[in-house]
Length: 298
Image 1 (cartoon, rainbow, N blue to C red):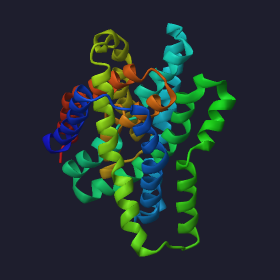
Image 2: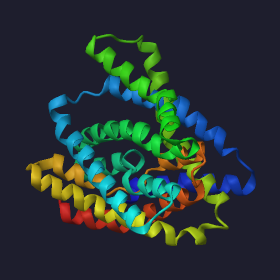
Image 3: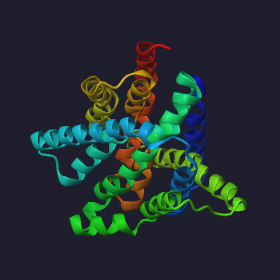
Image 4: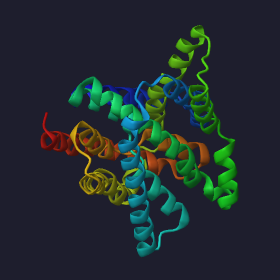
């Protein structure tokens, strides 16, 4: 856990200190992440992964069914509490989308070795598809309703990067070898960039974090407790076992994704509240993930 989480905390801390010394343009950084870095990561990952569709299907099924179940839960909760539309969007984004990339991959590798990492990559690819469609829709729908949000989804390059990579795999096409290292480096640079952006957002919100703590209790509880509980129920229902079940349960228990802070910054959806949810859920996950790893065993 120390090996997986401490580097994240250090990088976020650097972003925090940078904002304390200099005023940073977070919209420019988030635009670079969404329009350049993320599409490169998706394209390279889909083009180079070695896992087969047969191995990927159980994880993909668990991810999508867990997301659907949590969506129904957040809808019911929002109706019961009569949340405004923007608050409902924030609750959905912070409660459902987990940090499977920045934290999930290293924790899966630490807990279950190389095979665990390979399975985590499949989950992450599916999660990226959801975040870049459903996630962007909820982050941007306040700007002009459902129609404008849908147009926003299809204006982003990530969905086209994924389609291009899958088409090239299906047609057995390749790109020149000398371009692959550049794509790899550009895509992987997303990981520290979004962590730095989170630190910058936390520094901007440091005087107001106290006012958002009460608002993030429910999404944090949903993300860290209800999320893995739902996945465990689905694993039992579908009869999935072995390492696949363990990796899925571990990834379902990850804190709120830092990419959600990027989207909410880009589209102006309560970025400080979202940054508070990301930060507090990450701290709380020290305890929840440690307990879960003890329960899962070797």
